Length: 92
Length: 99
Length: 321
Image (cartoon, each protein chain N blue to C red):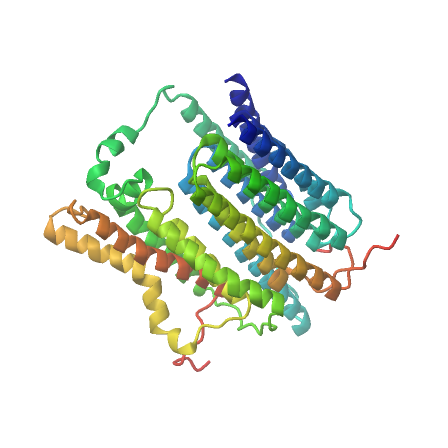
């Protein structure tokens, strides 16, 4: 079972890596932020799998904190950092 | 014991499939709104199936409860953020993809 | 268990490569927003690396601060940067040019690479069975008052370092606040979804912070982790337009900010006068004293991190600006 959990964690990590592509391509700022959200959720799943694989229940607290804090970054984006003029091009 | 392992394994694989679908959707869908849709599938169903699979393997009811709590929080945060981002995108004039 | 080792190796290698790659891309990216998102992803991967290195306490702190709070702070700073640029354009002033003399771009790279090479040499030349000080910590753990070795080291054996860290945090806030600050924002009212999200998340964040504080005595957790989750609650409130009541912004806010350092200093003075040794707790009360210190530190850290988002001291009844 441990092997299986670790293999799934590796698979999810590869997923996370594949999602990086969206951060680079955009085209809008929202797309990049979406990718960051996916990373957060994938990281929650990875940490939960590792908690089970290593038999360390304290790691579930780490996953809990991940889940909560991902929302904070997204709210900061929506409320502050999203430029008002978005025509699909990046001018910064 | 071995039946529990198979059940848990099947649930975990199903969850991983949804994560893969979410990532593929994020990469391949044509605009922000459809990508949001794909993303929340990974959030809700993907993580949900994984949490159930792990709760089956968990060592105590407290641990399973904590797993469930994590999933509920991700649900709450994920769906609210998806709504906020979609609303903001509409407000900023990002066009919906038309075939 | 060959497969487990192989999987762990692949996982760690991918993490390490991903971290290096993300760091280089984040630094090389001309678009600031993209760089911030990459930095947040970097923080996430770094927290995963701490998990893989079997360091859940650090992973907790990294998840809360590196992946969450720093992302929010950087995004808010980016917004402030953009708005100040817009204001300058509206006012008709050109953006101020810095001095033209700049160090060559390869210089930081060379310095950092030599530091990394030095660190790598030191790490590789350690004896293969280096066990560090964990044996001594384990031997003295019963007298420390807690059963989590990380908390014992942070709050008892090396509490002098934690005292200095509290002061450093306070100084950082003073530095940010003294930069002149941004004008008071007129936030748009949050819609119903954001409102509900914050109303649900902030109590959960406070609960989780209290849980992490309490559990730090016997499991990964503690003051820093708890304080950063509390800071996240404060940041969330501030982002949705909550203002600190003007009556609370003068003395109570400042009391909360110095609570951590003040409690540590008081404890240091008392132990110095009582036992003659700095910050050496009587072992019977060590657990309680550690809890008191951690609670004060948590409040301070949380309020400091949230106040960093403000950029300047909140207006209080005594200000007439």
